[in-house]
Length: 267
Image (cartoon, rainbow, N blue to C red):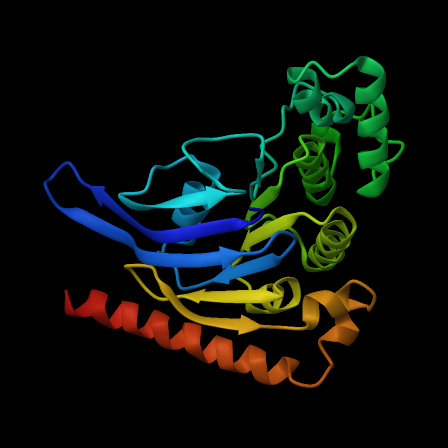
């Protein structure tokens, strides 16, 4: 059975002083193959914890994650991760970074070269194959990170604030690239972001997590990701319903942040 299923995931972190933090509680979600999901929520609501559990970096306290009919028990190439900072091998050039996964799989050199060149063209880095990572801008480094992730041919791509460190113009271009890759590759994508606008633009399903313990507070089914594949994202923002959705979610997040700050003040 194709797809990703999150079944009653809870995560508790036990501290050295005997106290504990309930980061997530009873999170359940069915994600069909090829969907793009964005996840929003106030600081500390467990967004990254949830992503790390799906990636297999953390074992949940309760519940399980199933992908394509089997239970996730640890990291695997079927789930690729793109971090806020590219986490690239700085001592390697662009080509070597992207080809790392295929090399580890002992893919024949001719196939490696063909695949890497294709992916670099797809992400707009044709001609930069021999450049050192430190010579690239932040946006270009994230393009390398995307290409390296795709080179492993994962079923699911997990993105933890991948565009958060970019300037506004570069971020907008990269948002368009993410949508292009989603549509062209058919991959399932789960993207964590703090930007309400980005979540609306890149999520055909948008999840808002409640404050700790993190749980799904509200889900939106949105048309804007599909529209953004063929339209300029600035034009998408002008379409009917976009502004109302943005303001509703902003108010929701703001109220949650106020609740958190009020609770902190009472403590």
